[in-house]
Length: 292
Image (cartoon, rainbow, N blue to C red; front, top):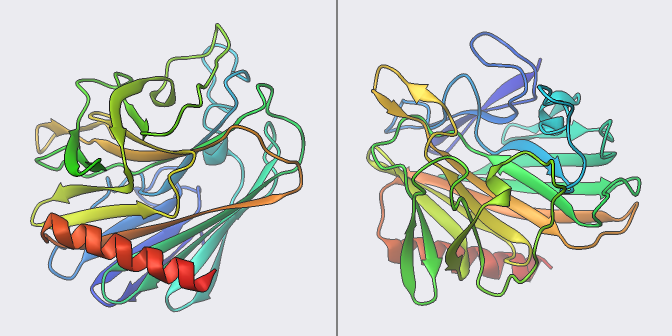
């Protein structure tokens, strides 16, 4: 089966690979669905996904005109789903055709309202032509009234909602001085367009009906936060667009056949104060530090 359903605490998540099934479109992987016991509507656009592994990029390698197999390589290269327990599963993708990147995405639900993502990857060849390695995840949100991502700056909260797709889309950390370079014929895209805004703490949250969706990360080095107000298309019934709440991980240099790791935690619950979001992050950081 390309997907499985997991219920732990307040959350029910459908975790799936990039196959098509029913209304779910081929190419979209990760969390096919996420619901809360007090919110039956899928947080994510039902035909696509959340925490969807979307792009591998090097700024140089591009598709022929009209093609997207390289641009959306994680969508197109085969993945397999393996159930690990009643609380989690992993997606395995063998080395991809163009970038030869091997990866495993492990999802674990924890009571009452947490999903942990443990992403491990290995570049198996020197395939990144501009020497840096870029990865990108997208979450397509199901027509929220407020499309904004809220970020934590230096001692204040920031609201990030660009006016259009590919416009000042990506927020880097305040100490991130690495400049991505691109071939002259590289297509326009979210990760090419930086915002003047800078974040301080590696997390963001967004609002969905009476609930809050929080994403926090185990590092700020190389971690960039991205928003598109229209990335998930149009919701005709709601007469609005579906935003994309995204993130990237960029390695300025990498070693072949070395395993790298990125950990993230998603929290989905009824709305809580911003101070609680920061407390959750601090608690998780202590948990990670204690685990080593």
